[in-house]
Length: 370
Image (cartoon, rainbow, N blue to C red; front, side, top):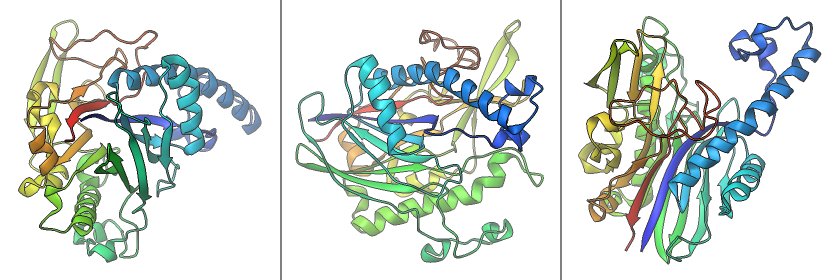
């Protein structure tokens, strides 16, 4: 009995327009910045037209990337609400590909922009095993105080004991696959952002991601028992905005690129994998070929890294010891720099920077659930 499980940050699957760019230049789209817009009413009209025109190409590519996973269950990040999910699934996935995901679940989390985690599931697997939803549990309400996770580093950053830990949620989805139980934990950890307070964006936000990772582990241990959790069927899926390695890129397209694998001394991922609690199965791939995201702030700061994870419980990882995840990179924009031998045929109409399926790549694995 097999299951294809995937995760994908689809990036801003919105059901509404965002007009904040009129007053906040950081949120203004670069296209509109080229024009002399006289007032907010004119800005709103132009922003609506721009968003609609750009979204169709983007969502076609997003749908192609999801279809390429051939997933029975796909965990999603940056979904506005259930209506956005339904509209995308019917208008793009179903109409373009012809195979829909009838079961769709999400709930409002803590993100200020309203982008949440979600899951889409087929009614049955490709092998015909029924996929049945049991329940959904949000942990968005968990505070630092409840889990005793307010560290001095977080306090120094201004966090209070009664504040919520998760920037989005840790959404717990219980289901059965042909009668076999499986629990999914959908996450989207704190993003890195730009440098601040003399630290780079990753270092400055690391204390919060460490707390989020500790909270996820605590939730799982409390659910299944600390001594038994690793031996249950569960997986943590999502964009964790952190990495244990990165592939540093130097050079240019004229003189050639150089790639170097760099290990990180500290990562929130270590909190979850410590003691064999779970396994980052993407690390079964070669070091140079684990990336799901291309990061750049100009030619002086470029690297490939894994931000998107399927972490399998010790039990599931052991039962699928030879399973190696696929990473679907065909929806990447042309600006993404691929190491030698990893080049793929891009989906039709992918642009230099946009349209694109997402800056993230879907990660998918075939699991034996027997």
